[in-house]
Length: 371
Image 1 (cartoon, rainbow, N blue to C red):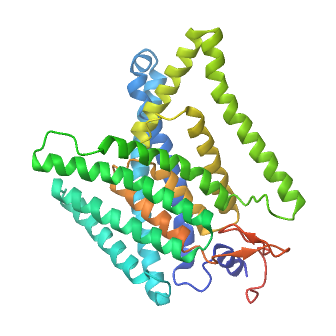
Image 2: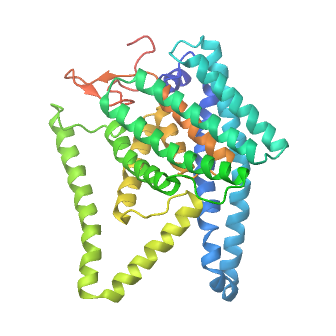
Image 3: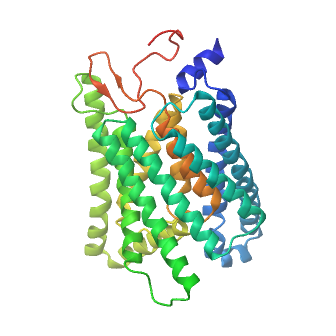
């Protein structure tokens, strides 16, 4: 009975390998987030804190330990994402590929996994890296189109298009620069830096759309409690955003030295995120803080509901912007697959109003035969 309720909550009812995929996703979420914090973020602090590490042995041991644990978690995450993708493909093939573009998605994902395994055994040269990025670009947009076809909501389509264009900004940067290097061309590819920065801006904008789609808030709802909660969170977020923007102006007016210190601190944070997640923080710092809060809330809400979309959104955030490692590319692909195959496309609340994608108004312990 417990397994039946769990499967129904996650939208995995009746699928082969459902429990294996569920527990793999939970382990992958924990391992991936821990790897992000310990390896890609904290271990990068060692380059900033080299003098402190030399003076304090505890700091040096902490940074070395975090780096070692993070590297082990990186390998563990790579194994888990392979297992999750193989389980997902098995379930898709056993289900008969009922959705549009399913056959193409399964073929492209299988090819990407085969290339990843081949490149692990035989490290690729520039041409292999270009082919891998081109295949990733095609696969991402096939899944984006499939998501848009399955979800009629304009907000959902805007969110997935914004995210797809954002990832494409990085992929274009990587493909163009690697191609020029392979050809021996010393000049910069056309608009490579502009498109790279535009892609980062679109990734930040996608965080607000993720919140709009998966946050469960709606101004138009007739539910007064939900409407008051929406107004509260929107007002709080707006005040926080405006406060961070005004803070810099006030510090610059009354204490320019303090303003410069705050800016240097934000630049240091930006450097860490650039090394760890690929964000350069060239936009106002408040935008990144707001995006982090939006994405975190949407992930927590969906995960606590037991929805696939929560794990997919989490993996997409953990992967970051610059997909410099193959397992990060697989994180993005798996995340897109999970939010696309999250069960019911559309739900309605008790008043007949549409609920956002992935939000269910049905009790979690509803009998398995209910609709």
